Image 1: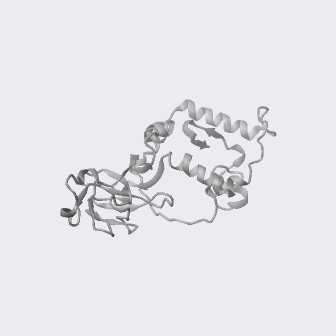
Image 2: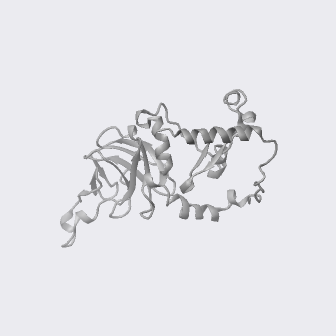
Image 3: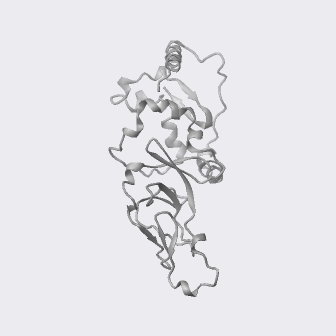
Length: 250
């Protein structure tokens, strides 16, 4: 739902941005960002350990898993994970690792299956990650328990039709992490939206170089003079730092 006081506040701040001819009095500047933040392998590994493995990552739209058995292999270089819609209709995420010798159980990018068979020793799992068949089970010692050897599940939650995954059990729930975004986005009726097209591009750069372009509008007139340039006035942009590391640019 819309909050009139929030909208009024944003409009007031946009007007202030358009009117000023120098930095605000409280702005004292920031030190230059070290180039190593974009080039250091060590710093990137720290980000993987303390950032990407502990936050909710967008994985897919629910329409990409339309029926029971629909699966989708995620493109996360450091974590082989796939999504699948189970027999109960819920979407789950699992590490793409067989419990026996660690071979993958999913090799295609996407598809529909009612079972996932390891390519190495033919151990088979159902759509809810349970181990349901073992080749030559008679050869395993007494006490062998298939119920304890299912695929390792990854936290997976859906918000407004968008599916997210999180490798950390210590992180808050998806809605807690989204915070005020959950409330503000209700006005857009997200559940009625469907992807019109999905395209992927591989960029040979540090991830922050790509993200930087979407965190500012300073570049609009230079890069997009005939596209969005005529419709946007970058001088009136208002930046908001929200809880849990989120940002809003109006």
